[in-house]
Image (cartoon, rainbow over all chains, first blue to last red; front, side):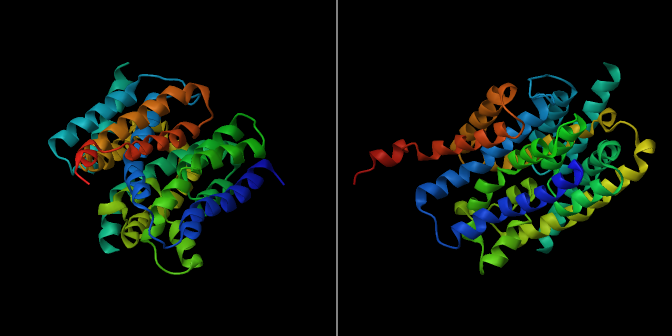
Length: 104
Length: 221
């Protein structure tokens, strides 16, 4: 079998298992309070890391400052103006990143 | 669930665009059918891009699978967080777990560490169709579309995540610290680790929740 199809088949089962493991093993039991507090902070930590990696690193993982940073700043500006303007922030980010790429 | 679907539409639109770029990049490496099948059965953007990057560079299936697993590993802590909010037996719980994607998981967070699973399912629902459909568009119409980066499309998802993060930061001062620490950890180790590892390592920033609360310590017993 080709590498492509092996990858697809194994990743299908691996991804399904990874997404199932928490819900199945932890079950419905109520978690202790300290665990709940850690979980509450998981979202900001995870989202900030996804933003940082998606904006400031290149495919090799090295740190870079490019048009994506300008796009993120534009999104931040829109969100300061209106906190719920999710789509506006995303469009501003794409537009500014494209503009910066066009002129550099 | 209907509210979730509505909330998921902008994310689905962005997924469509991202999926097109996945299709465009995957077609020369994987052929016409495989990328579409992959989007339909794996349904995990970052893992698919990572596996594709390995295969494009001439890497084997083992390395591609490992890269995909590393990028998906964050769903383990995310699933643990989700678990207490789910009802039903193991099969049903596992099925709901399949609808976890970053954006809808973050959108379905409610007070006290709980989640609204129906809202999450709704928010993911339109994403599935735009992700698979966008991949097909990218595979077949890649030549007409050109370079997704020239359109700034790679800046879309960080912007969405930023919008979701702003909501989280409003919950507590510790959320701000966890976010700053998470980003710092991810960037600090990114040059030295495989893709996916920085985001998993950033999860450890959430452990600052265990730091004693000064106000609480001073309270008389």
